Length: 208
Image 1 (cartoon, rainbow, N blue to C red):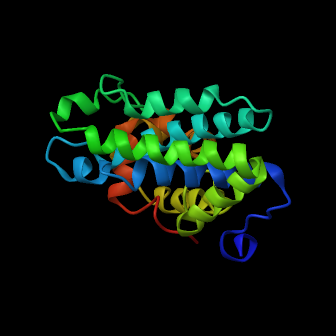
Image 2: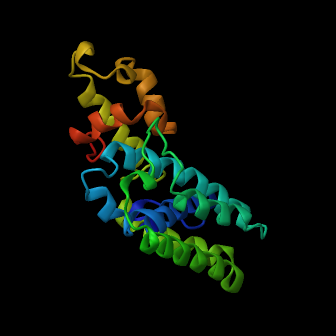
């Protein structure tokens, strides 16, 4: 099913770890009470959400890789990164959870429970079982950074970007080859303004 729906071969470990990291971030962070915070006027923008999801994906991938050898400390560290109300988000954002004034108890409980579940599966059923479960959580996210289809989405975005005059583009997107590389490898380094510009025009939601 993973191979047919999102192009992830479960026998290819790097692809499975990557998809599991995407699924972990979706389950523990994105599909949570954070959505209510995101919808508020003082909540994070779409660009900030995207940059932070990319950053957390990398941390989740590191945590899952470490867990293979029984090291769960990075998983606990990931929980702290997600729930720290004073921590500034990625992409040069100044947003913090504390800045919203929201009651974060439900969000913290959600994150804690989802990461506890992953640690429990690793300890009781094994590392691969945990990866498979989290990878299946990413089935609805085939277009996300970290999934096999992401490079194709970037290629499509760059074709559409080429139709714009350089002076109309945010500064990080004017060098289009550098922008392509950043989008493929570390989209958050483009900064939230450039990501917001791309998202507002649907460039990161479409494929060729």
